[in-house]
Image 1: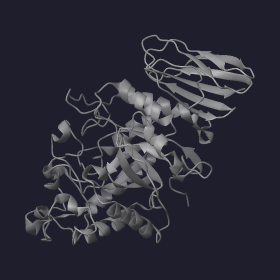
Image 2: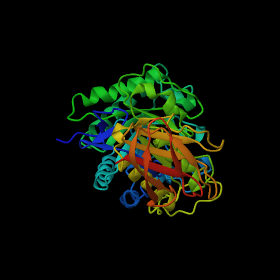
Image 3: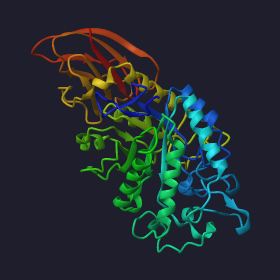
Length: 448
């Protein structure tokens, strides 16, 4: 029996699948590929795979959004009411309301088809169980809202009291039953990890509730053949959150909008994979999110998920022309650039890498940020942001004596721009002079 996605045994800051190290890099739709019946996930997965990407993030169906939420046009999380599917069937005798005491066979049939399609295209699925309600309109659509189900459960003082141990009343048992059911159904799949809750910090959901659900995933899988990783979506970038003494159920720590990637620096002590699994709210230019991806992954990140608004129902090839008010970007060229990032790191022995902040010795222009991963004395990967139009950088780097091959890359274009050989000498920095780059640059240095 194959093992599912797990921590790499030699370097647990990275991941492993089928006994091979793996990086997860993608530009994915807005998490509605499963719950939106109008979304063709087969075509979507084929698009990701063709662009060299290997991850998607999807919501379970207990949370959805109304059209126009967050100013998102053609939001995959906002299907028409009759095209929405969730774990619970509708009951014909109570005004088409959901029945929380039964499971919808059609949902689980679609869930398994979704997972099989992902596996066929070698796409890893981040399966997100829960999400807080940002607005009343989202609570109004939830199957857990008493107006939407036939169980006549008592009303909650506040919608987000649902996600608590002491204020959710009988709803807690329904959540637990849902977790056990979904975890059991998904257990056979290898390209999978669970995330307990999207952005629990946005509505200050209790950590004890979050930990309880993570522990429930573990306990459910104790009786099943496979064990899957569990992600904690820790914080948005800027919260300066340092994780201390996390519950042992968590093996992945995901942040949102992590640019610059100081979340990695602050949480390196965890010795676990750290991800940036949502981007946006920084305009629509490809270079903004390409830089975020390169900088994050070359800071030691294990996964990156760009939120790509060029995917929509009927536009699963990623060619939706979104309006100017869309709160983020996404395009076919950007997806190919992210695929190139993934291939760049895969061409390295990245499992041996660790950050090397002191590798570049000379002062750099103020608008230039550099990230370096190193297997000291053997191989180095460097990324520099904001190089400027046709700008050249001089880098004085700390290399042990020896001969090295230098490969220069333009992250906006495929392939190697220039290759050279240098000889590093004892007691002095090696000087690298870059070719001109329009926006950013990457360098791979390998001992010969």
